[in-house]
Amino acid sequence: MAIEELFSSHVVLVDSRDDHADDSLLWPEERAALGEVVPGRWWDWVTGRRCARRAFTVLGVDPAPVLRRPKREPRWQPEVVGAITHTAGYAAAAVARAGDVRSIGLDAEPDQPLPDGVLRRIARDEELDWVASGVSGVANADRLLFSVKESIYKAWFPVAERWLGFDEASVEVDQAGGLFRAEILVDGPLSSVTGRYTSVGGIVVTAIEVPG
Image (cartoon, rainbow, N blue to C red; front, side, top):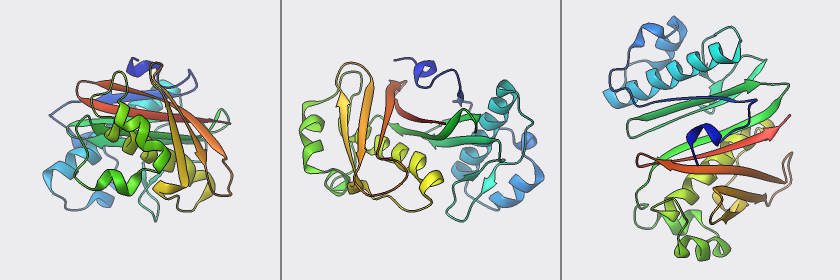
């Protein structure tokens, strides 16, 4: 699945692998919120916000600083929902108008095996079978599961405003279609979510769009 197919036409997705991040596009508030960080974290912040700025332009909304809420998730202006992700020299932002989309989940991970012991901490028993069987188009199904659960949390938290653990969502993957579905196993505003995934250039990207 191509990266452009992860979302519907309501959502604008902009990604980047640009090694030469330029912080001249940051708002002063964004630069102040970042503070003093190591170069890798600086690249993540600058490139993620630059992707968001470009996405705002395509969406047709006035750009505004993307700061952080208390749980460190992006703070969007009231008329926008969105998500930012970055990993291993890759960054992306997805935004939509709040009237069209309720929330967005977006996560990117290197298509590499999870570190030892991590799969057992994030996977439910029923998920281990499909992880062991492998998934078409993705080299490492364990990393795909991790990314899916990160996207679920990013879609869940803005509407629920509370934590969702790895074991509180059960994921099924369409082995051929680039799709997944997750049942949310706790009471809340979402009982299930559906999403899409792809692997491009060694990066697994997962995406969830909750309808408005």
